[in-house]
Length: 419
Image 1: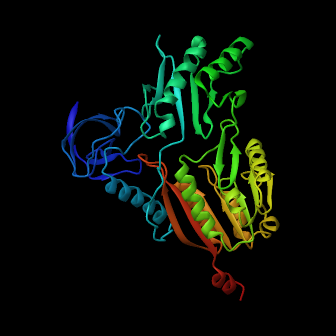
Image 2: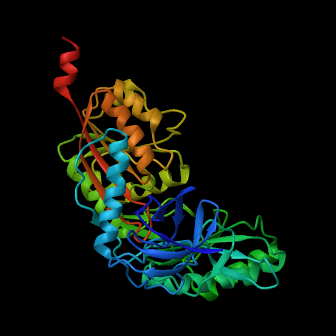
Image 3: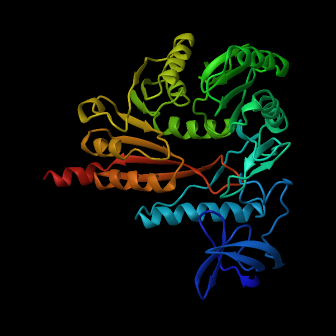
């Protein structure tokens, strides 16, 4: 049954929140101050209409907004969006007693997302290709994605549809990851399982028809027509199939700029959770680097790129699961700075080892405010001081934000404990 409510505030995931007799009601795509008509779905609601709009409301630029689950904030004016996103991060840090002023939000959308993962599903007799609707397994069919780089906006859905037609006989759910690299499109398909010889040949032929740089299934390369390379500083890195990549090129460059500036006086730096080297290869322009990563293929790609780049400082590498085997105190004590960029789970075990070490500087990069706050609180409790926090907005139109924290050892506090 439809009813009318007034939105009082925004939640951390961009939902409008109305205070009702039965508790907070979460209304996607509604803004504070708006009067809206909704239909309840438990603690959430479906937005039927905006009856009294906010002056901060904007017209979404994507025709799929509100159906597709990829974007959550296209209905917000830009300044309001930035203030909400920065305020949400500030609140999370305050809850963890990390009360350092935030630097201004860095807009790192650039040309757009350079990787899309499209879902191919067969819930009925028709093939559906697109993104999942929010909190649903329903696929919203799309023919373009305007937040992607131009090379992906229309081409990625076309590629996913062609692959779905080729592999659709078994009606298996497929996920098609398409990455824009300097040599074309790099495509990895998940969900199908091993291919028979006939299907392999058909897929190899399809890669030629689509002019793909590389095509892989579950990370196994079927055909590499051109090396899927990206330039990092002076290095050319051939990406492993399906490997981690920062969402936007400008995002990677913005994060790296902060990391390099923080480490500029260092002589030997550890780059933990290094991936293919977006920080390590840039740091090695002037600093010796030890890069540690659990993904063997990513480490191999980093090693190849470093060897092929003239005049870098020493780059050493190590394949190691830092969740199970964090660098220990004697190992850490050989570095004068540590950079760490873990997955969303954070780096709790590594933070505890850093507390026990003599490392004077930690640069913590994170895509999750909650685990960033947890790990930073551990470091602060052990004598580090959080000097600066930089929000980097490479996940535009979503609630997510990349964070860089600069932490230095509080020497005075540490000495006072020893006296």
